[in-house]
Picture 1 (cartoon, helix red, strand yellow):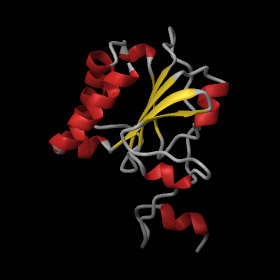
Picture 2 (tube, rainbow, N blue to C red):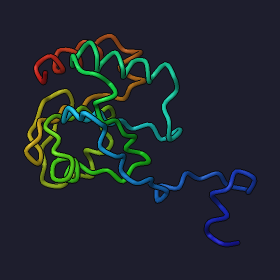
Picture 3 (spheres, one colour):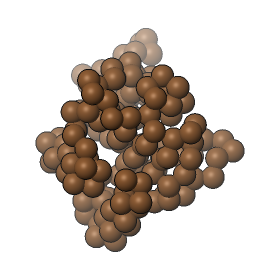
Amino acid sequence: MELSGIYKKDKLYDIHSPAAKIPPPPIPEGYNRVAVLYEYPEAEELPRDKVAFMAKVIEAGMKLQPAHTLTANLSYSALTLQKLAEEYGTQRVVIFGADWISHLRNAHIDKNEICLLYGMRVLCTDTLDVINANDTAKKNFWGQLKKLF
């Protein structure tokens, strides 16, 4: 059996292929230099309830228009923080999901603390599921989001 065979649902194994990354998203028209990234390995697209929550964060917490804000799923996109800074000119980033922190070397990043990476102000917080279900996590996130914006 060839290696790609184990990634098909009709085969014995159903293993998510981390190599199946889509290209970085295009820069939105009227880009406000803000990116909202999230970890959602279950699917490339977010379910409606999570999209609605992200829109609320962007509109109410950031006071920005979602259509002018770059959003991307870190589990599928080839987007990097360096690319955001250098090619997109991003100034502020909010990341839902802290798993990617473990892959950074020589960087001290704490959850729910604003840090400076590649010249951008970055806030890394819990996953969308945790924030929706946990009042303490939600309160910590909103408090830091106010400082970022």
